[in-house]
Length: 76
Image (cartoon, rainbow, N blue to C red; front, side, top):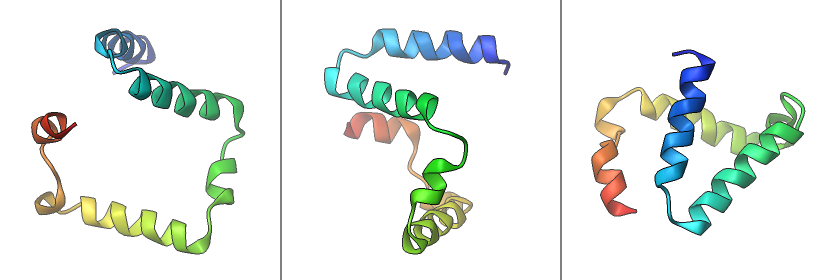
């Protein structure tokens, strides 16, 4: 999927969201990424936080640890 398609799909998703708090969270995340230098966020993490991220990634490789997107949408 190219950048244009991603932008289009992202815009469509955002247009369907009515939850102001969720929109603010998405905005804040994107704005922070736009304003920060590459790798700056990672450098700001503690060793323990980095370890947790690596562990989460490893656990995500096992399908039994994953939650179906439909179930997650229902929950929130």
